[in-house]
Every structure is written in structure tokens, then in C-alpha cells.
Image (cartoon, rainbow, N blue to C red; front, side):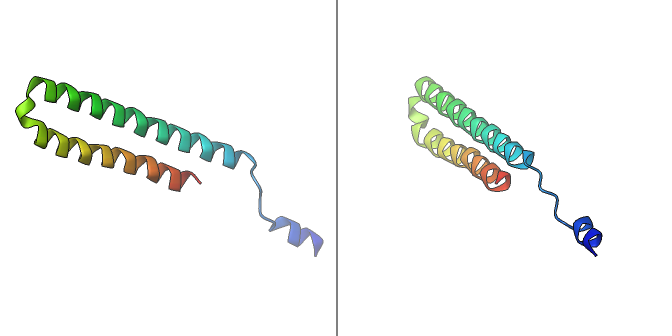
Length: 79
């Protein structure tokens, strides 16, 4: 009877938390890099064509929100 219970006991993997933390860190870091690149390119585009400021701002905010969404998604899936 004792062998049957131990055979079906859950296996605890201590490294699972570490790999989840690494995935969250990579996802958050990638999102931060993406937001930085989007911001720098938006500023560069406005510098070249100041008249298109409104359109560039709108597209930049949408792109940054999508990049941050991927970072949040990695946080949710990693934990």
C-alpha cells in the first residue's frame, strides 16, 4: 500500500521556479528593449517630418502598448 502511494506522489521540481523567472526576465527585458527602440525611432521620425507628429505619436503608442502586452503575457505565463 505504501509503495502505491509513493508511486503516485507528485514530483516537485525545484528548477521549475528558476526557469519561469528566467522566462519572465527575458520577456520583460525584450519588451523594454522594444519600447526603447519604438520610442527612439518615433523621435527620429518626428525630427525628420514634424508635420506628421500626430500620426507618429498614435502609431508609436499603439506599438508600445503591443510590446508591453507581450511583456505582461510573458509574466503571466512564466509564473
